[in-house]
Amino acid sequence: MKLTKLSLVAALAVSSAFAGGDIAPVEPVVEAPVVEAAACNANTTVSGKAQAYYYTTDGVDLFDTDSSAFATAVTLDVKHNFTDNIAANFTAVGYTNLMSEKPFGYFEGKETGAYLNVANITATFGDTTFVLGRQLIDSPMFGSWDWLLAPSSYEAYTVVNSTIPNVTLVGTYVTKFRPVNAGDNFVDLTDINDGNNYALGAVYGADALSASVWYYGIDAGDYTQVYVDAGYNFGTVSIAAQYAATDYAVGLDSDAYAAKVSTKVANFDLTAAVSNVTDAAAGFVSRDGLYTSSWNYFASAAAEANKDTLSWKLDASTELSGLNAEVSYAAYGDEGSELDVILGYDVTKCINLAAIYTSTDYDVNTDVLDAEDALEFIATYKF
Image (cartoon, rainbow, N blue to C red):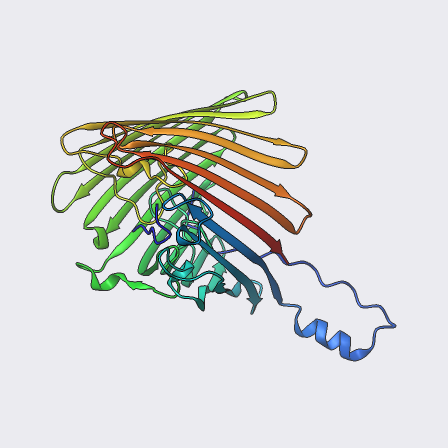
């Protein structure tokens, strides 16, 4: 497990939505300059968070400076409404590392830096919204992966339409990609192969039934993919299934199947999932939506030529006295297994403390790589 781990979140997100609020009415006793200031800022909302992030593995020893990293970061979200239907959205991330670079590496690749993770214009006309510029993307196999200091992001042109009741139609064309933990490094995808990278999707949701179908054309990965999923909530039990067929320009193609069942017992949410990947890894860009994926391992990558690779995952989560806890265990064919324990506690409405423990055991049949433990501690203040 390395800090520099990179990889190529139903509809593509219309970028980050930032909470605002009505300006409080001005009382007659308030002097004119204050009224002018309020009116000046009435169309702009600002929010954000300050974060401290500590990451350590047993590559040397847990908490040893040679296998640990520690950074602080501030994320500022700004939304300005030009009109009722046109807005500009910005997310700025500034960070500084508090431990030395060697040998583990810096968060975001540099000791100190800043970048715009989101910078776009959104325009809504009737049932159709356009998002132009740097944005977060949300779809099962092509999207923004939220890990470490900031999620991966894209420079893209997105259209979302909701004219059909209960159906959202989405199309996005991507030109650049910033992998998670890559600082201000946006990769120009138009320079790779034919340079066309896009997603087309239809998402349905009504009552207990949900479903989606997606088509991905990813020249950067030299593949196309058809993805479908469906789920139904019976009340006490929910079931879901998904399928991804990846057609590579070179080499073996891939078929990936997965299913999961979820229920609630007492105060525990329980999920069991199984997946199978045939011949080659299923294509995905930054985010792998297979149900059996874990904190550090993407199930779509568990594949061998001319073989079926079966994976499974069990997950349990609960909330007790303000403490949110989740435990999961997954096994990935002959490639290994992963145990995750995730804890989160809201100290106040604005302050959250979280801890993640991960134990991975790769290539369990041959013991090529022994189990690796990792701990992440995150303190977040929202403003």
